[in-house]
Length: 242
Length: 242
DNA sequence: ACGCAGTTTGCGGGTTCCCGCAGAAAATAT
DNA sequence: ATATTTTCTGCGGGAACCCGCAAACTGCGT
Image (tube, rainbow over all chains, first blue to last red; front, side, top):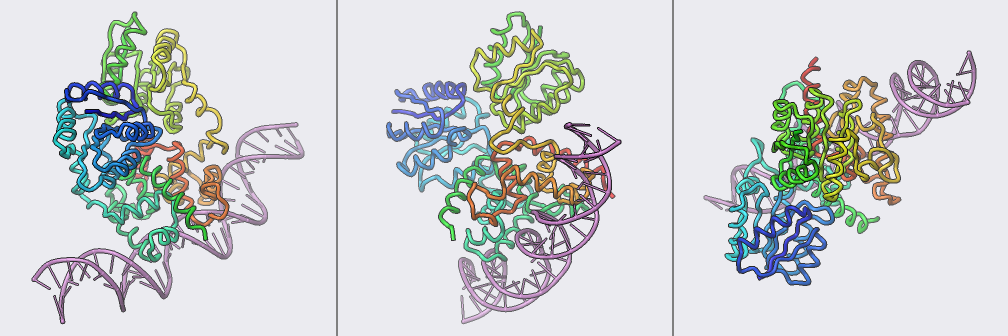
């Protein structure tokens, strides 16, 4: 049995290496990659079936890497090991998990034992292991306000990229008014009308910009999700020149 | 001699501990804090004169912590040890350094030797040590486009928080038109008019939102700078109820 | 088949943004 | 002290945003 570690921080990498060796005595090969693209390459060359992957990496982030790996071999088992439980990451991951694949999401702050247990459950038992706090985000509301639907999340990304209502409409195949409708819902859920819950500050905010702001502060968006979408947008733009 | 380490990642913390001990044999006490507020507290209690501080921490980030520490004892020597050279961090740090204080900024990706050398230079020689890549950001242009002036950076923060032109004007004591003027300059420098350098996409973007977007993508803004400003804004709002 | 909740769309309007133009004011240079 | 550059300001207008209202169009359960 072979395990591939994809993690850019050398300290964390060697820690993971040790953890894997001690949790999985049946594992005789551990290989390491120090960023997403190296990870993809190694996974392909070695037909890696068991991967531990960091999410936040410089060259190419974990979600990107996982997506291409899973596209090539959907039965690959991947344990995501991340510093954060940002909704943006969680959403990003659960979007790309193939049907029925075994995967895990464990926070770096978790105990040694939790990590080792997760390694065994996923790689040997083929089970999904999702950390408590992550699970929370995946399902229910983040705060008192309801969580965003998929289409609300889409427009959120679009305005975060700086798109116009008109362009959003074209991109999502909607009418202008529908886009604005979704924005309204978004504004509502993000509580952008009464910014700090204070009455009397109604006119202080540019709703669109404020929405992006609170989304970032609430970790609904993070930088890498933005980067990803920016690339996506770029591609879309180059297809749709009229 | 005593050194205080403020770092939330346990692995990095113990690595730092070792590095300090080996680089500074004259150091007999090393104490550790696992977040910014604990760091402030320990610094106060122990009158710490030598601190190594991570920037990105959960509870209270390094810049905040450093600011209050320096406010109490400006001669404290602080070495910032960070994963990133985001302009937002660099700017944040150089804003709070007291006159003539010795400090350092070293990236986590730097070599062992570089870190140890920096430790000795700052703590023993009272010199400033700033990493190459950081230094670059501090002074000249980030890319081909000129770097932002202080006032452009201010409006950037304001629109990133979601403020209205009108509120910005009140907050910065300007006329409405002046605010919009600064925004225009900002848009120019951020190259928001021809988004990807492509001719013919002129109308695709909401300039205000796009500006924030590219600022984040270019690391002019990061999440913690936003959080800081959001607090600031909150305070300002509560003072200015009319 | 019926009703009901949630989406989508058009229309119309008030508001804010974005900015060219041009004169005042302030900072800087010579 | 004068010239030059930069920044600030008011005015005006076109475009984009935000949204209430009301009519179609889903989907879903009974």
